Image (tube, rainbow, N blue to C red; front, side, top):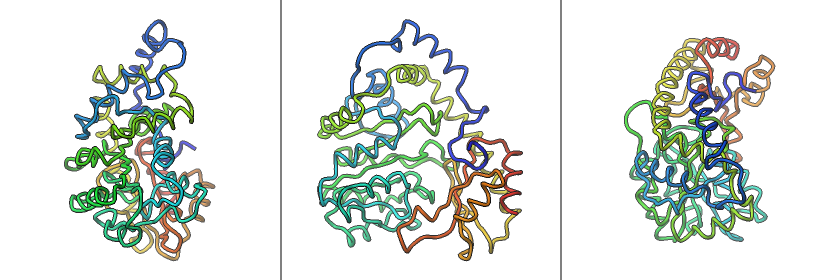
Length: 360
C-alpha cells in the first residue's frame, strides 16, 4: 500500500501532474499521440531520440536513437536481456545481494545453475570472485551506479576489471542504471556503457523519477544486438503503447524532465536526511543501524542478527507500515536481516509518525 515506507510512491510535491495533463491534452486530440495503427517495435522515434539525447548528456552514454528500445520499465528490459543473451547452459553473474526482479527471472529459466551469485563489498561487485566462480559466464547483471539494495557505486578499479573480463570472455554486461539521477553528495559516476558501448546493454526507467504507473523504460543495446532485441520484443508484446510515449517525448524535449529531476533531488535529499535523523534518534545502535549511502529513494536499515526481518515486516504491516525484508535479496546461506525503507513519496510528518511505530 502507498504508506510509509513503500518504495517509489510519487508525492504531490514532485508529481508532474499539471504539465503532464497539458501535454497529454495537446498531443492526444489530433497530435502524434492520437489513436493509430501498429507502431515501431523499438518505440516511437521521437521518444527514442529524446532518450538518446538525455542519456548522452546526463550519463555519458554513447548511442544513437536506433540503439534505443522503449520498454515497459526495467523489469521488461531485464527479461529481454535474459532471453536474448543467455542460451542453454549459459551462466550469468548476479550480485549478492540483488534486486529480486532479476534473480526471479533467472530462477525461472528451464536449466539449473544459470545464476552465479557474486559477492558485493564496499567497492561493489567482486569481479575477481566472479572470475573464480564462473570464468566462462555469458552475462553479468550489475547495478553499478547505486548497488541494489546496499547503495554503493561500483569503484573505478572494479569497472575496469569487469569490462576487461567482458572483452576477454566475449561476455556481456547488463547495466541497470538504478537511481542514477538521485545522488545527493558529489557528482555521479558516468555510466559503464560509455566505457564499452560494444559490450554493455544499458537499462533505464522513468518509473522512479516520474511515476511507476507510466510503465516506460528503455534499453540501449550495441548495434550488433538491435535486431535480436527487436525480434524478442515483437514476440513479447509487439510494441509499447504509443500515446504516453509521445507525451513523454514532449516532456523531455521541452526541458521539463531536467527541471523535474532537479526538483525531485532537492525534495528527496531533505526527506532522506530527516528520516536518517529520526531513525538514529529512535533506535539504539545495537538493535538497528543504517547502511551508509548518498543516493537513491530508499535506506537499508540493518537489524541485529537475532531479529527476523520477515516477522518485523508482518508486525509493521499490522501497524499500517510498509517495509520490505532485505534477507530474500541474498543467496541461500548468506542472508542478513534488514529492512528496505522508501522515503520518496511521503512528507516528514508521515515518516516521523511511521518511524515511531516501527521503532516500537
